[in-house]
Length: 327
Image 1 (cartoon, rainbow, N blue to C red):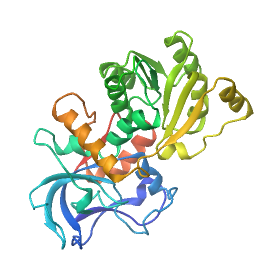
Image 2 (image 1 turned 90 degrees about the horizontal axis):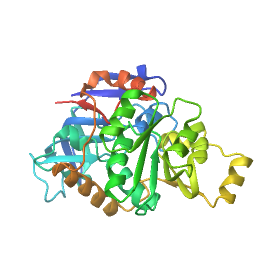
Image 3 (image 1 turned 120 degrees about the vertical axis):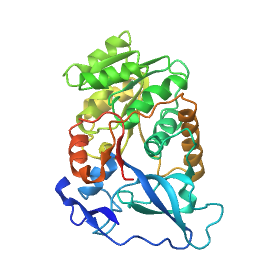
């Protein structure tokens, strides 16, 4: 089969399309004929070797796969070949014509949902939904600021924040096209995060008060400066692989946190109970099926374009979810 193989950590050029043996499902596993695969910032950090628990080299990267069950291993019950499924894989394997997944990780895809739509949700859907409910403890009437409103998680956050009771949603993006996208998805206002004064623009959009909830996925300076856009008693939520790197709070920022009764918390789905994640994914899939939630994505890319997709995502040149059409 054809697959993307990573033989050495480093630049996107290390990702190469090669011929590799088709995997055979083991006990409790199924083989998926992959129709669509999704790209995440976790994949970028994994390719650079920056994450703990990276599979030993060489390996096939990719965490999200949607397709049709092709074969089942021993001890697999209730899953038949031909079933349309989506799965978050355990660390590797999606960027290939065939992928293995634990049978317990499979989620059925509703008939009205495409493979491309479905593959945009295993990581991002629960992150957005539970990030609002659990991470931010969203309350009715809260104002929410999303600095990366044009990304895969950001586009879902804009829509779901309103559904869960936010009174006002402000989308941030450094490109006009992404800000226009946030408006179309329901953002009440947008802020140009390429401007040095973007925290002031957030306060301006909230009548000088700041946002009750700020979601930060970029880390670094964005994470630290987001405190300037936070309201008294506000909650700053850090999530995603990029937020693990270079987010530092100085003495002045810590003093401000204390004085304004603000909080900074982290949010990750991989430490949550699997049943909670499964229920969240089923919930967002149902919203997509009913036409109440849009999975925003660019044109699906061929698998051999994975290196360029890594470059585009790193440069914030993508909108919504980056999806590869495999079959």
